[in-house]
Amino acid sequence: MTYGSAVLYEGSCETTKNLNIGVHLIINIFSSAILSGSNYTMQCLSSPTRSEVGNAHARGTWLDIGVPSIRNLRSIAKRRLWIWLLLGVSSIPLHLFYNSVVFTTLSGNSYFVYITNEAWLSSSNSLIFPDSGGYGPLLSELVDKQLWKANQAGSLQRLEPRSCIDAYARSFISARGNLLVITSNSTSSSEAGEIFDYASGGEITITGGQDATNLDPYSWICGDSLKCLKYYTSSTLGHRCEEYEFCDVDALGIRNNPQNWTLNQRKVDYCLSTKTEEHCKLRLNAAIAALVIFTNFCKALLIITTYFSTREHLLLGIGDAIVSFLSHPDPVTEGSSLLSKDDETPHQKFSSSSFGPRPFHLSRKRWLAAVSRRRTITIFTTAALSLIICSALLIYASFNMKGAKPSDIWTLGFGQPSENTLITFAGIRRRMIRTAGLLSNVLIANSPQLVLSFIYFSCNAHLTSMLAAREWSSFAKTRKGLRCRWGNGEGMIGMISLRADTRH
Image (cartoon, rainbow, N blue to C red):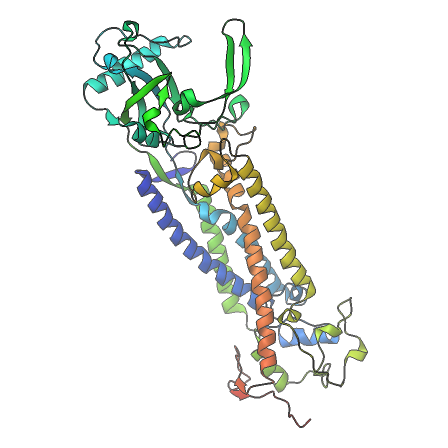
């Protein structure tokens, strides 16, 4: 176990990807089930009893029946209120952490690239290196003991120019390592058996500091095709390039014209690549797993407690309310069949003039009229803000991809790792790979799910309100049965018609 994470699988990146999809499919099925059960239990807990409705009517206000309701919470029993709050709070860590119990780590190799010719491959003379800034002995040992001997042993894989570009023009390389790029032999005897140039690749720096924006892992491929964006003058090195343009093998035409691919002003004939084992990992974070298990246990315990301890006859739906009010009419609202929430004052009170008989005026009502203005404003405001923020972030990301056009965002792939999809901050350091850093990354990645879940539950309440109003209105048209959760003391009410006599 490393930094609180256990390795469940290590090996092929494709296998790791498939396992990750399967595991997260199972995780999301379980999380959807537990959150749906929690949501239904919270709706039941916020449903009023007949006595709570009577008390609200006596105060000149009303309660919601058959829909998820927050306004009911101030009128329900304290025990149900506390269980409702605990269920709501316990949903937050599930939204933030459930999908991150199991995660993958990608193995990306850094590598050295050496540009040489076939004369060097068959030479047994001392190797000649360009100026390496003091690293000549290290490079000599690396080439002599690894690449040169590997080629002599026939363990390097030959790649034609197009295949070489496709294999190494990637953000992360898991199955390949050091590379020899073989160029055409020169007629100059001074270049026989020589390493003409070397470079490195596969490195993406996001650890902050001066290299925080080093997001060009295969710039060596573009070599001679890159334009210099910024020059500097050194007293020892003279006029040198400080910053090159981003390497885009497609935009520069290198991928589609491999026969004209040149490095160090030499035409590339083929490449000799080192094959490496993949080390992608499927990991489980123990701290997050413990938190999720504990939260699930608490949520399940609360649901079971609600099921066995709630003995009040809650008015869970329209049918329950109809049965209750027909069996025991409400003295406060008796004779006020046309009373509606439109009669409510700004202080959520019904005036005395609202009660009693009144003339009926036929008018068409839209479905939206069944939903309170506050609920409508909340859902549309939240959805609009979410769309605006997501659109702004998408536009910002599209126009800040190094070496890519905004339209190239469609070629990145869904959920595929890329240097253009990394979130980099100047303050990020190596400690971010530890448990505390992992938790920070999890919170950043999953925080939008809280907003989406809020929008989902708001939409659920929105639609439920409209369907409940439709169900209530439908009794005036068609004789139908009631959907009841409770009996009336003498068995369930079967068929009741609430249709008014058309003669009146």
